[in-house]
Length: 131
Picture 1 (cartoon, rainbow, N blue to C red):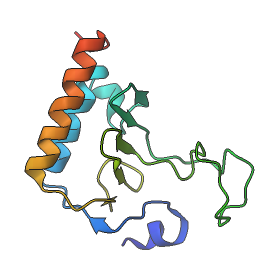
Picture 2 (picture 1 turned 60 degrees about the vertical axis):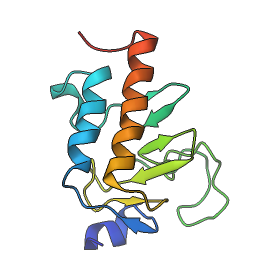
Picture 3 (picture 1 turned 90 degrees about the vertical axis):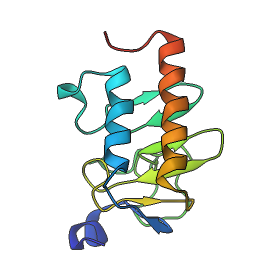
Picture 4 (picture 1 turned 120 degrees about the horizontal axis):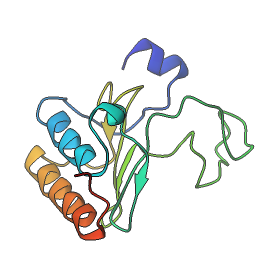
Protein backbone atom coordinates (compact mmCIF):
# COMPACT_ATOMS: atom_id res chain seq x y z
CA UNK A 1 0.00 0.00 0.00
CA UNK A 2 1.27 3.46 -0.88
CA UNK A 3 2.20 5.62 2.10
CA UNK A 4 -0.16 8.45 1.09
CA UNK A 5 -3.04 6.01 0.77
CA UNK A 6 -2.20 4.45 4.11
CA UNK A 7 -2.18 7.83 5.84
CA UNK A 8 -4.90 9.77 4.04
CA UNK A 9 -6.62 7.62 1.43
CA UNK A 10 -9.66 5.41 1.54
CA UNK A 11 -8.61 2.69 -0.91
CA UNK A 12 -8.88 -0.53 1.03
CA UNK A 13 -9.80 -4.08 0.21
CA UNK A 14 -9.01 -7.71 0.61
CA UNK A 15 -7.43 -8.36 -2.80
CA UNK A 16 -4.87 -6.08 -4.50
CA UNK A 17 -5.25 -5.48 -8.24
CA UNK A 18 -2.47 -5.39 -10.81
CA UNK A 19 -3.09 -2.61 -13.32
CA UNK A 20 -2.09 -4.51 -16.47
CA UNK A 21 -5.20 -5.50 -18.39
CA UNK A 22 -7.58 -4.21 -15.74
CA UNK A 23 -6.87 -0.57 -16.58
CA UNK A 24 -7.65 -1.10 -20.27
CA UNK A 25 -10.98 -2.67 -19.38
CA UNK A 26 -11.98 0.25 -17.16
CA UNK A 27 -10.97 2.71 -19.89
CA UNK A 28 -13.17 0.79 -22.34
CA UNK A 29 -16.09 1.18 -19.95
CA UNK A 30 -15.40 4.86 -19.21
CA UNK A 31 -15.29 5.67 -22.92
CA UNK A 32 -18.82 4.34 -23.42
CA UNK A 33 -20.43 7.03 -21.27
CA UNK A 34 -18.00 9.99 -21.36
CA UNK A 35 -15.27 11.37 -23.61
CA UNK A 36 -11.83 9.99 -22.75
CA UNK A 37 -10.28 13.41 -22.07
CA UNK A 38 -13.05 14.32 -19.63
CA UNK A 39 -13.08 10.89 -18.04
CA UNK A 40 -9.49 10.16 -16.98
CA UNK A 41 -10.48 9.75 -13.32
CA UNK A 42 -13.70 7.83 -13.95
CA UNK A 43 -16.50 10.35 -14.26
CA UNK A 44 -19.39 9.66 -11.90
CA UNK A 45 -22.00 7.45 -13.53
CA UNK A 46 -24.68 5.08 -12.29
CA UNK A 47 -27.34 2.91 -13.83
CA UNK A 48 -29.15 -0.25 -12.70
CA UNK A 49 -26.11 -2.44 -13.48
CA UNK A 50 -23.07 -0.57 -12.15
CA UNK A 51 -21.72 2.56 -10.50
CA UNK A 52 -18.50 4.49 -11.11
CA UNK A 53 -17.41 7.10 -8.60
CA UNK A 54 -14.14 9.03 -8.93
CA UNK A 55 -11.79 9.09 -5.95
CA UNK A 56 -13.41 11.28 -3.31
CA UNK A 57 -11.11 14.15 -2.30
CA UNK A 58 -13.51 15.68 0.19
CA UNK A 59 -14.57 15.03 3.73
CA UNK A 60 -17.27 12.73 4.97
CA UNK A 61 -20.63 13.57 3.36
CA UNK A 62 -22.85 11.98 6.01
CA UNK A 63 -21.70 13.88 9.10
CA UNK A 64 -19.89 11.00 10.82
CA UNK A 65 -16.28 11.24 11.97
CA UNK A 66 -13.54 10.16 9.56
CA UNK A 67 -12.78 6.92 11.40
CA UNK A 68 -16.30 6.38 12.68
CA UNK A 69 -17.71 3.00 11.61
CA UNK A 70 -21.19 4.50 11.56
CA UNK A 71 -20.99 6.21 8.18
CA UNK A 72 -24.19 6.34 6.16
CA UNK A 73 -24.24 3.78 3.34
CA UNK A 74 -24.34 6.69 0.85
CA UNK A 75 -21.28 8.48 2.29
CA UNK A 76 -18.92 9.34 -0.57
CA UNK A 77 -15.89 8.89 1.68
CA UNK A 78 -16.47 5.12 1.80
CA UNK A 79 -18.14 4.57 -1.56
CA UNK A 80 -16.46 2.13 -3.95
CA UNK A 81 -15.01 3.64 -7.11
CA UNK A 82 -16.54 0.83 -9.15
CA UNK A 83 -19.48 -1.36 -8.14
CA UNK A 84 -21.05 -4.15 -10.19
CA UNK A 85 -24.48 -4.36 -8.59
CA UNK A 86 -25.43 -7.91 -9.62
CA UNK A 87 -22.66 -9.53 -7.54
CA UNK A 88 -21.55 -6.69 -5.26
CA UNK A 89 -18.08 -6.79 -6.82
CA UNK A 90 -16.33 -3.54 -5.91
CA UNK A 91 -13.03 -1.81 -6.59
CA UNK A 92 -11.47 1.05 -4.65
CA UNK A 93 -8.48 3.02 -5.90
CA UNK A 94 -6.25 5.82 -4.66
CA UNK A 95 -6.53 9.15 -6.52
CA UNK A 96 -6.93 7.74 -10.05
CA UNK A 97 -8.22 4.48 -11.54
CA UNK A 98 -6.33 1.41 -10.39
CA UNK A 99 -3.57 3.25 -8.53
CA UNK A 100 -3.00 1.25 -5.33
CA UNK A 101 -6.33 -0.48 -5.93
CA UNK A 102 -8.16 -3.28 -4.18
CA UNK A 103 -11.18 -5.46 -4.91
CA UNK A 104 -13.57 -7.12 -2.48
CA UNK A 105 -13.80 -10.41 -4.44
CA UNK A 106 -10.89 -12.37 -5.88
CA UNK A 107 -11.85 -12.54 -9.56
CA UNK A 108 -9.72 -13.07 -12.65
CA UNK A 109 -9.07 -10.56 -15.40
CA UNK A 110 -11.25 -12.72 -17.67
CA UNK A 111 -14.14 -12.48 -15.21
CA UNK A 112 -13.62 -8.72 -14.99
CA UNK A 113 -13.76 -8.48 -18.79
CA UNK A 114 -17.16 -10.22 -18.68
CA UNK A 115 -18.38 -7.75 -16.04
CA UNK A 116 -17.20 -4.79 -18.11
CA UNK A 117 -18.89 -6.22 -21.23
CA UNK A 118 -22.21 -6.35 -19.33
CA UNK A 119 -21.68 -2.80 -18.07
CA UNK A 120 -20.89 -1.51 -21.58
CA UNK A 121 -23.99 -3.27 -22.90
CA UNK A 122 -26.11 -1.61 -20.19
CA UNK A 123 -24.84 1.85 -21.20
CA UNK A 124 -25.50 1.17 -24.88
CA UNK A 125 -29.02 -0.08 -24.11
CA UNK A 126 -29.75 3.04 -22.05
CA UNK A 127 -28.71 5.39 -24.86
CA UNK A 128 -26.19 7.16 -22.59
CA UNK A 129 -23.16 6.25 -24.68
CA UNK A 130 -20.96 8.92 -26.26
CA UNK A 131 -20.91 9.18 -30.02
